[in-house]
Image 1: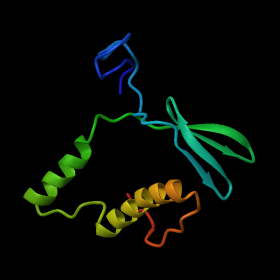
Image 2: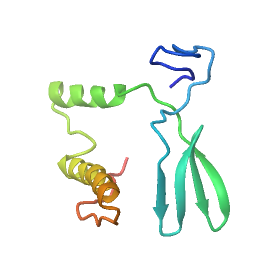
Image 3: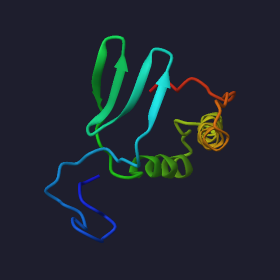
Image 4: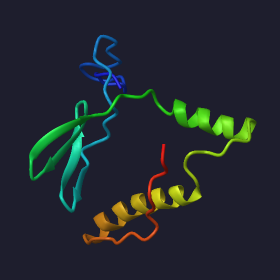
Length: 119
């Protein structure tokens, strides 16, 4: 994602091709874990734990090119996808859980989470 306002209004409208490429940012998300907290940084993620804050860089990506290529190869070459239906169920559960937690102002326990596949 490049700096500037991609929606075409106000100061800075349009893309600034001279701006550095950065990971997409859709609003601040803070993840509270047992041993620390994680949130976005301009270059990736900030991890806060007993040792202080450290930044984990995340390389930017261009849209959903990788996901579309994986889907294409699964259909045309009969290859399995990296992520399966269980992963999709776990992802949907997280999204619905965030909405439910926000609406009801309470913790929501998740039951469909699974280990990430080995890459």
